[in-house]
Every structure is written in C-alpha cells, then in structure tokens.
Image (tube, rainbow, N blue to C red; front, side, top):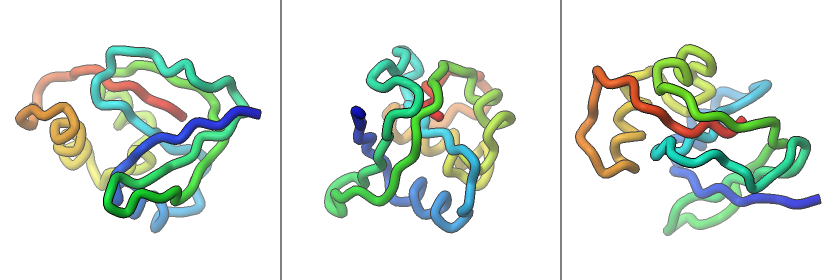
Length: 113
C-alpha cells in the first residue's frame, strides 16, 4: 500500500478535528490546474502541518479527486472543506494563491476526498 503526505495549515486541521467524526473531507488544492494522481482509491492520505509544527496530525483513505468551481466544492462539502463558510474558504484559497480575495469569481480548485 502506498501513502501520500499532504501539507496543510493548522486552521484547516483544527476545524476538521473539532468537527469529528466526518464521513469525508475535502483536502483542496488552491491552483485547480492539475488533477491529483498520486494515489489510487483505498490508499492512505496523511495530513502534515506546515512548519514550524511540521508533523503528521491525521489521515484518511483516498477516495477520488476532481477539479471543481469553488462554489460547487463549498456546496458539496460545506465545513468538510475545513472552513466555517465560503467567505473563509475563499480567503484561505487566496492566501495560498498569493492573490487578493475574489468573492465573485467561480474559479477552480483541486478537490481530494
């Protein structure tokens, strides 16, 4: 069995940890340009925090990935995106895209479930 380690931020992790148990979560990728292909369904996806915490905090079983408009990702997964609301999610995506928050555009993000 293979495993993949995805690097995430503490706020994403904390919200999901405090919302447990969850049937699924969306480990989103801000660029939305490439399809995630590192794992096959059933393989292990681990979550590691950004530095300075820099350690594995959890994981799950990879189901599938897709590229979706951010509005559809929010509508489909809600707080399982690791954000309280769509506004907060857009802010987090913008931070990692190194862009200003765009509250109107329905840009694409990668979704790993």
